[in-house]
Image (cartoon, rainbow, N blue to C red):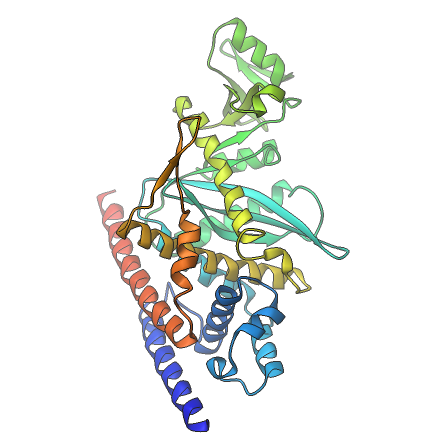
Amino acid sequence: MLKRSFQRQSKTSFAMTKIMEVFVFGQYLYFLDEIRLKRLLVLSFGILRSKTVNISLINDEIPLEQSGRKSSQSQYNYLLGVFQTGNVQGVIRQIFNLLVVLFYSSEKELKILIDRTNWEIGARKVNILSIGLLYRDKTYIPLLNEDLGYKGNSSAQTRINLMDQFLDWWKALQIPIPQFIIVGDREFIGEKWLKELSCKGVQYVIRLKANLKFETWLNGGYKIGKKFGVKTLHRYLQRYNKQSVEVVLAGEAIAQIYVLENEGKQALKEPFLYLITNIDDLDRTGDIYRQRWRIETCFSHLKSKGLNLESLNLEGQHKTDILMAVLALVYGLIVYQGQEAQIKQPPKTIKYKNGKEYDRVSVFRQGLKELAKIISFDQFLEFMDQLFRKIYYKWLSMKQLHLMNLFRQ
């Protein structure tokens, strides 16, 4: 038994050594040390095997010989070590780097979705603000997640800080910077927030509440100090057969209010969608906004239809933030593997009455099925070693492209 355990430990150590070789070369992409990285990978493997984020249930799914621990309690404490790091931002940033390079392919334009998901753990309210990229206009990939620590909407400053972190970390990767278009629902409004997005060069398409009021730019003049309601502006557009109306945010940023006819069952209750945007091509506004629901699909997979997020049994906002980052990594692995499988064998589709077609088996379900074939931690390390190397070489290619673009400028 001891001989078998030693052999497994040697194999695991060898796999970790191979992975750390890549980390040494890619010092701006990879920066966790071997101890933190191995703990992160053991936890990720456990989430995949157990399909839950409950640490006790994860612990039960990992054989002791695979983690190298001597007892179940020792292994449980080992898993908790991921959340007891003094480098919370380092762990989150490492996962951010991995997911960005894995799912971004140097597109000139990239849609960024923002939303919240919340639930209760006893008396505690968990309220997660999430921001991430839309992959191939189909799948939301969460990149940054913050436990707000309170019930209700996020503040404008919280969103600004999160967006600053997103932009700073992206720039630090030294890869092409696309035109970001952030898409959100009615709670992500506020003139301060939208003005800051414009100042940072970020475009947006955000749904408005019908009771909001704005200063406007009408008939060639800025109506300073006088605000008009959204519904009043809608009537103005109908009367003069106009597509949009300019409004002024916080006295300096210009945006357009665009009115769109609603679709489906929701149209009976709310026949119109009121959107605010700073993109030039207003004809794209509706299609861009309608992709927002992809983030809801992701939340569904993270919660009741996949990874059982609501079984979280950790206390502390920083622990929740780390757990959400690890879960984003696991979710990313599932989507990546599902996409690879569907490239090799395209799935059958089903057509609905509205004429739209969808895959019979989603990328997420396909990915879960593929990753279920990985039954040991050693196999998982081999899989991750190959993926780390692929990400590293892709990153080098994108860095080179970024340098060439800078040189041309």
